[in-house]
Image 1 (cartoon, rainbow, N blue to C red):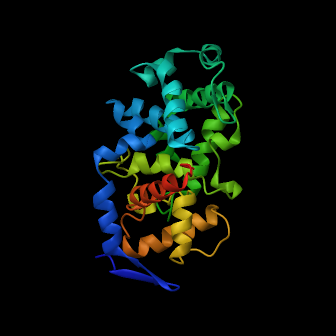
Image 2: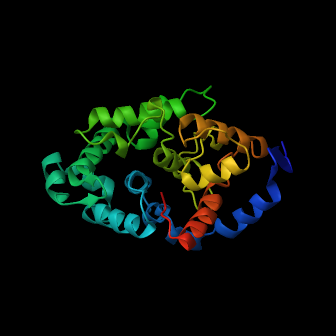
Length: 270
């Protein structure tokens, strides 16, 4: 099925040619360095990439500078093989390693609790991809339900940590950072790692941050007043009309175009 040339929404048009122009501009390896996805590409082993991805995506709020610094501090103690490190280290050592860690309101205890859940989930399912696929219904229209079950399982297996670090769509949240992680794991191009080919890109939901939400409202893809889960579903449906097999194809490009505009105005990544 070929993409439509445009989707008319309100008084504006969502022009595929413009989206393709942005995709060609931004979806290049050189732009990874201004995005937390760069941490996924630092590792070769898929399990290490999963650990790096869930840490980097979970901390992807605030300014780009803050995010980069915090993810560096979070991944540093895990060394060159994060998955192996987690498999060998008990929670009490994790808690000690991250004592004093802070990313805005996220503490070292939160991070240690998340990693504890990640470690236990990987031990039980072989990988985070194994956990996700065990929760994905083959008839699912999108990743919303599986994402919620995925987050629930990690929280259940880990020590206590703030829910906002790994929220569930079941609570009405857009879960931007969780869907960002899924985009990295499922899509495959110069930006996204494509570690879970068993899951089709067609079911991904847009990681709806403020930049994507602002653009979506401008094009009439949603009339909702907040960037919540329902808005993410509506926005994704609009993009699915022009790219049925890959509705989040343009997410990175739109986000970075928005980030550049925000940076000029003194805004943040979140």
